[in-house]
Amino acid sequence: MQGGIAATLDCLENCVAGVLSKDKVRDLLATLEESKLVLQDQAANGTIRLQLPFKGGSGDAFRVKFENNDRKYSRYQMFAKDGRFSNELEKKVWDENDATFKRMKIAVCCAETNSINNRLAEVKAELVKSPYKLGLLIVTVKDDPQYSAIQNTLAHAAADANEPRLTIALLKTPLSDENRKAWLTQLTKMELANESGQTASANNYKLESEKVITIWTSQATGGGKLVAWNGTNVFNNLYGTANLRHTVITQVLNNVFSLCPGTDRQNGYCL
Image (cartoon, one colour):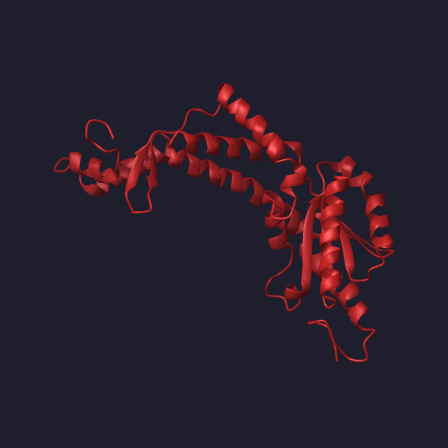
């Protein structure tokens, strides 16, 4: 507030009342917002605040916070349990309307050894606790060389697990260093804008950071190539998670539970 005048839409409309109609004011503001000259931010009480765009997305303050975020949000952390990227991908891997959804334990990790080991242990623990469930570990990579290099390790992990309900899948669509940098950049700008009280810019940066995640997960699940291992079986040339789901259901679920005299295969119970 400057000299008793608040930078809000209501205040602006009152200031120009009799000169411009409310509809005209809102049309002009929309034009300014499209040009990113003025931003509007609605508070919880409904008040619409008018703000200038945040200009602090560079310089020493940005560099220091970016470096902190780079350390804070390592690939390991991004794909840890409840990580920003793992959470989003895990939600999209399996159709929640499918009858098998509630009996799937799905975890996503990066191709680092600690990430694979920790998330694989998480899946195995759930399989011990819930004998009717299937486990799916999805491993992500940063580039094509890593995709090629990690395959032998994952094949051995699937075979050594001695667990017919466990499938390990490798996703070829990379979360590249460029993707990660783009996400960190928007995240850093969001935090700086929030610290400066420029909530409208912060919200825009938040949306941009979420868009990076959404675009990558959509590419990965929509038609990205996968290879999967179940015990010593290898499933090559899978494209998209719908193809992966079909393979797990027909080649894993149906085979495992066919050992029962009678089986409700969708729900995983012996009859």
